[in-house]
Length: 290
Image: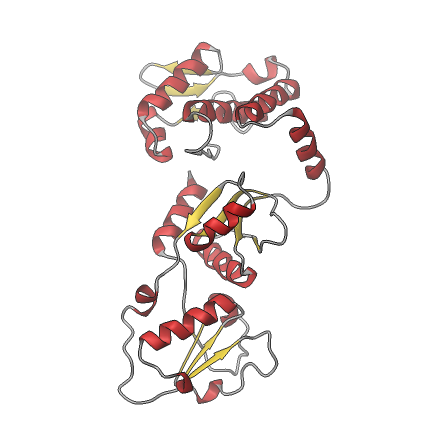
């Protein structure tokens, strides 16, 4: 089954779903005879009303794209795409979908020109004003879904269908690229990060390592919330010279998932902390598997 992207701020959901199913058929991703999800199952996956899915199925059946078999399910009509002209029909449908999104032929030509170069196009990219934080978020997402996730700052708009952004910085990204499709990720709050952690009853030295200025700033706030005075905290950025100096004297060393990979084999093993909530990781897994 192809992946479906629906935007609540775009054209009617019915038009978006219909156009994407047709694109799937014409591109060959939905082969003739392929069984589609039931109305109930598809509506649950897409989090839309069943009537919307039912109306799309009925419309595509009437137009000869789908077959609704009583007691069996919904299937792609065999041979329909090939009979209608292959790439020409596919192109016409792309133009129609672009029109629904408010784009003209010049927009499509410019997009095709960009696709013709050698730069890679991604389905989704993590974007953040702090590129190192974007890198850390991407690493956590990769662990969760088992797929490579590119990352980027705001210097140049990523070539992606979907930009993954933290809730706190979604406004900055949307202001920079108002037409971009965003998926918001929730990062852990300070109480969530410190949940279950108890301050030792005696003074100890704490080391925290990250390439991200945002993470290091949060760390100072987090450790202050736990009652650690500044002289008991070492904040280290591996991009700086002698960054590991003093870490062996620390009773606790913590690092983000990216910085932890840079520790030498004979260095103290850091405690790895993660910043993306489980809720957001689960939501991204849903996008991958649907």
